[in-house]
Amino acid sequence: MSKRSALESYKQGEGWWKTDISQIKKNEVNIRGYKMEELIGNVSYSQMLYLLLCGDVLDEKKAKLFESVLVAGADHGPRAPSIAAGRMAATCGISFNSAVATGINLLGDSHGGATERGMKLLYETWEEALDNDKELDQVIDDKLEDMLAKKEKLPGVGHQLHDDDPRVHRLYELAEPMVENKDISGVYLQIAEQYQRLLAEKKNREITMNIDGVAAAIQCEIGLPAEAAKGIFALSRGMGITAHAFEEMNTGVLVKGPCPNDEELVKYTGVEDRKLGGREEI
Image 1 (tube, one colour):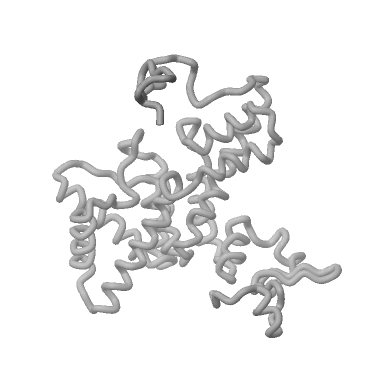
Image 2 (cartoon, one colour; image 1 turned 135 degrees about the vertical axis):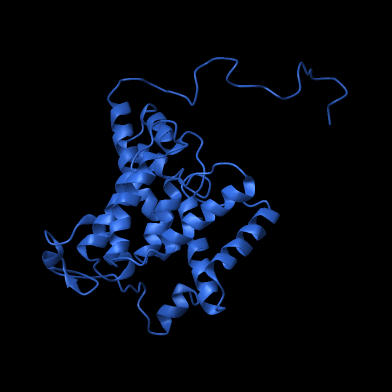
């Protein structure tokens, strides 16, 4: 980013908007140089998403693997804050698209950000090994030790509910033959597994990879940018948010809060029995 103002750039002869993505003219829609009518019916949703983000069309094997990641993250029930928020919003009388947007707007660093952090770690680990001609295992050990010393959480491992996440197994079943056939390198899957194994050794307890960990590795394998991960997850989980908001909107229930009106569920921790006119007035 040039950090120049839009007006300054425009005065220097640049377009008000500049984009390499789409060229729209009268009766003509071009995406990354491809005519839209050629893309329609010939590329899948995941291929289109990759084309928009990265500028190339994924081959069908990689596109299918990418689409499997999108499917895997689509829904995790009302336990997930984004799903719950979409459902609550739907009971408040706002428009359907606003209810969906409410759920999507909860996706951030804490809920939905682990894949991005995982991808950055995987990319950094491999680049550090290559650039410094260091053994990959040593780089992983050094970086994990540094994270533990800083009390940072390793992204992509552990889960509040699952200790044997079926989504992880299935994505590995799809990815491993592609590694054997050299359709993908497998290096990022290997790095993710090594981080998980090494952490388990250092903690001396079983630690499993979660959906964010395998999603990060697969998205690195096909060359997606880490910075796009939360947006990609929003498109994935957006399917579930849409379905749940639609279901809730059609139940007829009104103004559903985050929990029932049970005093035991909400703990008040403030000052008790204050009165005006006392010493606490300022």
